[in-house]
Length: 84
Image (cartoon, rainbow, N blue to C red; front, side, top):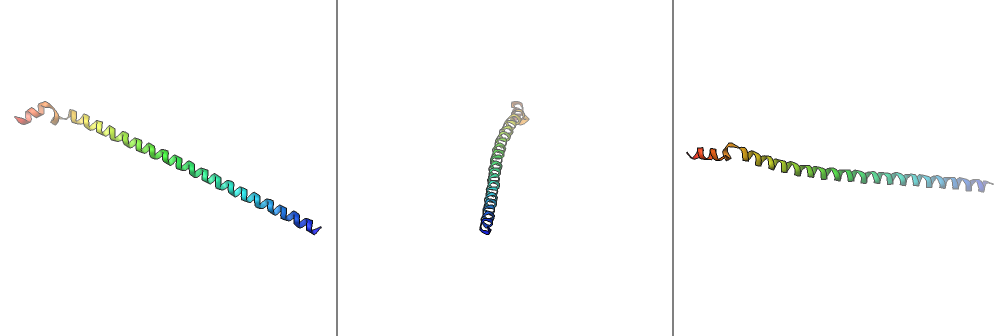
């Protein structure tokens, strides 16, 4: 009878160990999935930041062209007045 009780206790301990291992594996898998999601969001943020930097650079360039176009130094009347 004691052998049967020991066998039942061993089986119970084995089930508990398997359940614990499975639970730990699930937690590690969830953590890995979260890391992948974070890495994905970071990549998207970096791409968006680079795209915004490009837009800012283009806007700055266009603004400088417009300012140069309308500045008194670049107008023909200012050039004529400066030579006289």
